[in-house]
Image (cartoon, rainbow, N blue to C red; front, side, top):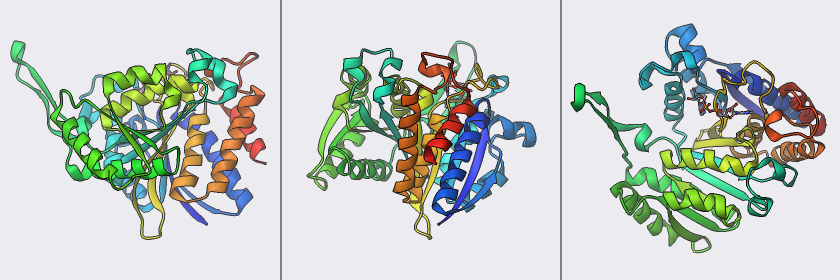
Amino acid sequence: MELNVLVLPGDGIGPEVTREAIRVLERVAAKWGHALRLSEGLLGGAAIRETGGPFPEETQALALKSDATLLGAVGLSEYDDLPPSERPEKGLLGLRKALDVYANLRPVYCYESLIEASPLKNNIVRGTDILIVRELTGGLYFGQPRGIDGSGNGETAVNSMVYKRSEIERVCRMAFELATKRRGMLTSVDKANVLENSQLWRRVVTELASEYPEVELAHMLVDNCAMQLLLHPASFDVVVTENLFGDILSDEASVLAGSIGMLASASIGNRLPNGVWRGLYEPVHGSAPDIAGRSMANPLAAIGSVGAMLHYSFGLSEEASAIESAVSKVLKSGNVTADLHPTGQPASTQAVGDAICAAIG
Ligand code: NAD
């Protein structure tokens, strides 16, 4: 199969973890005989430095030409004082919008060999296997009007949480479909006791439920969900929620997996004319400036994102499973980075990449 993949290493640890993920992708392509066509582009702080903006037109054109995009992370502290519209993170929001990847899939899985890496008690995290489906192209991050206006005591900031019925429906439909392929449970998370936005969300999800009688639907308020994720994580299967709630809950859920360096994500949009699902694949973590350039970053979230790319965009389940098995094997061997609290000397980012490639064979 021909795999046209755009790579956007980004900032901080982005290039470090992406390098290992690409080596794994090359290994898989060589072993299974796929033609890998890689291109590379600029996004985030790296793009601001080179072009003056976080999301150059050339990057957008490359992304629209590719079947799938692999992103490292964006964010540089030197740009922290810029307004949101000029910051590196704006590049990422622009990319998601341009690709119309509206459903962000974030699996949270607790490997038995990592059970001690979570600060939560073993009996709580054991058996955790959650798929968080976060709406990605609407809500507070994109809603208009937005901005800061006025001065003195009257200075006012506005952000708008806006959702159309069609935007809620398409992401929730995807969540129902995914639940039918898993344990058949879907928790829709909202704040319907306070927000009209959530009331519409709840109404639309409830209407859709009649089309999926095999899925058991539950509604949960976001504040309660934040608590239940830490009290009874193993009771969740698929969780669907709007953009901001999903952003926060999935970072919280990373504690269940042992480290944010373990969490991969897939952002899926529409099917391309060649039958491939257009997708953007990226670790959940950010650019981690505190550890950048020290070869300490855990590359497994980026490597897991390559596995998700093979599975969702290209339908290559055998190859994706080979990556999952390799990750499981390497975790058992204890050859892991410092964030996973290894008993011996922590492995470097590159050593973990080497071990995954070796395990794939
Ligand atoms: P972060 O995810 O970068 O880091 C949070 C903590 O987790 C840090 O202690 C970091 O060292 C650790 N960590 C993160 N990834 C790790 C990995 N692979 N291996 C080991 N440890 C890891 O979040 P932050 O510090 O809040 O943000 C830093 C920058 O990243 C900011 O500019 C922020 O805007 C940006 N950011 C970008 C994205 C993205 O590109 N998708 C997501 C979140 C934050």
